[in-house]
Image (tube, rainbow, N blue to C red; front, side):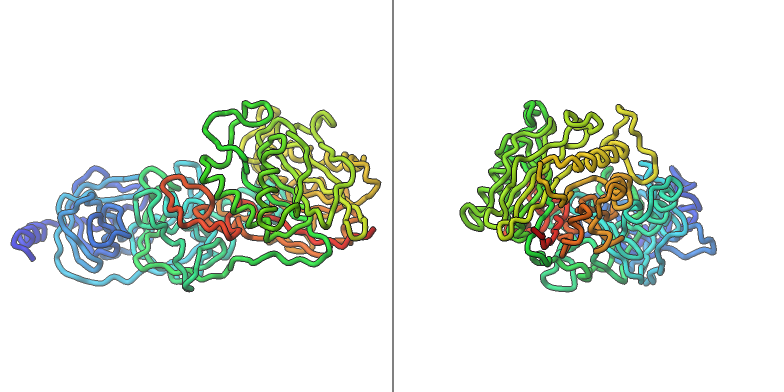
Length: 605
């Protein structure tokens, strides 16, 4: 130890240290904010900047002191020592720190003026388990597991935790974990209910924890945890698991003022995930005819330049690729997925609402990959007024369009609000081998993402989100419209597919059941059905429903989980300095954010 450090240590030893548990206090904030204190303890997490470890940089280190007998107070605290610390500490160092107590984004910390190393010691990680006993609302109104008792401490989760969300892994280094397996949306399993939904949200929050990358920089490269698995070719997916996770606990937004405000585990032992949810290969379903539903996540044949000049009116906000390079990547991914789907009829959702450009671009690229004239599309022109529409492509050797397409919009029935839901598109197809007919209807109901307060359709807090009445009415009108045989098929076999933006037990899906349609998932994947992940919970918002006559002709069903479980960092986008080499256009994984549905049929003439 240098003479200067020895003098500092001797001076500090003459002072009385404030116990760390008194600095933390029994509440969410320290009772000593603004006061100058000296603390003493063992370094349990080294996250200093400008040291030899570039994988752990949050501007300081975690110190844990002697425990007290109060279960409401933590024995650890974060010491902030800036980007160029004067003393390089290491895990196991006994340190004496003098500084000012602060609350920084909700985390108690000591902003260090002096740091002295006094010796070495060891601290055993405190074992804890989820679910937490209590939850609370953070400053964003989001429910969070209450782990204040352990803030700043070295903790260990001996239990198995499941990856439940990867949405912010690239941007903020977050992997959301959950106790007890995959999380599902409330209304994917239970009937809508205000009281039940509130209780469910609390139970879900108590089971969750964010694993942080331990770096304050947003969009850090390389992306931590992406390949952190127990197998050499590992790529993280929702549903994978990890056991024996050890690290220090902080309350923060993760990357400065950004990210989710919650408790985060900063690992002190590099995590390794177990592959529990492997990537699926090409879908296999029984049946002579294969129909698919595929939301292609805003496939626009033009480039989004930031100018609102899209849609039939030329005034809608554009979506999709922001450059020619992104568009080429997006197209390659979607074509890879379409090739592997190998479906005879594919209902597409979130196409650019042009006369034919978006569909034609897809079909040309698909035929280049599988053979000339293998696929064609139904030329509907623009449908409705939105920037996006639905559409059909089909395999020319196995099916042929029978008659004209039909569109359900507000001009057909004023109850169907086509300023909210996209118009429904119906087309009858005949199977080439035996002439059997099938009418497929592809849909895209109003999303939950924006409100419908302007038409008095409020979020009721029962788990169904915004605009539930709008979607429910659309479902009822759709069933009535199909009762009129809108394509003049003279055949009762109807297959309703698409993004209904309603989970399995919500009113719109129930409305279709009540009018005689059978949800194929009910007899196949059941309560564990899902095609989409939002807010760390999986659920089915893409559906396939059959008329009574078609139900016995269904021979197979599959939710092809190539998208919802994959991290967005693998998609076509290149924003925020993303490494282009992460992209693999030869595979279908993360071609979209929705999983395609595949329905196998043995149609009777």
